[in-house]
Length: 308
Image (cartoon, rainbow, N blue to C red; front, side, top):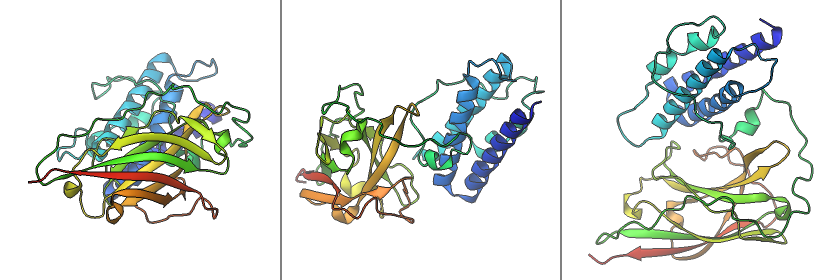
């Protein structure tokens, strides 16, 4: 085993233990982040085509399956269902397999398959890329056109059926103010509703790529239909907006900043909300403003209430 491979396995093992520890302590957001970060690195190694890899094709397949299990556990932690599909004790069975991947020759304990590598970073991954070299930001996107091709179709969902006495919310994302708006490539916004522990309360939605850029603004002008009646949202819930853009130098889509709106801010009409530095803090405990400049996310809310 080369020194590089030994170091790689040690890093994977340390990341696995961090995630499992967070999981066992009930720090679900941190566990999800760690699992998703490690899953991406394992997927990259499993699908690597370079000839200097010490892993055989069969070992790469096993590495890919471990990545799938990490994603299954991450999904189980984010599920609002009471029954967890993939339990922590199941995941822990994989630690010795990962540690001894070069000599492991038994049948994999779970019926899963490797999943394709995604190009979207997990929350906070850029701050935890201890496996990769740092790159200078540079002027990625300078000179890119003012309008974007609609390459990302978005995952917007239709409005829920109305119920007597219940309120539905439509949020129109109008624009976001950024000092380097003109440099953002294929920007879009991911919208999610989280409880105080950062757990999803509704399906996550992605807007299509922004319609245009203008000065210090990226324009969206798109409606988001909240996938839960306002009255059914848990106390302390918040609606998050993560601004994401493509980084050609690093060849992935990354979160640039985020904003959120709490329940007492749900009111009809326009609203501007502050932007915060990544990584996205779904628990809202360590917030840091993106800039002191008067740049915000501009929204317009419409409430729909059927009389009882």
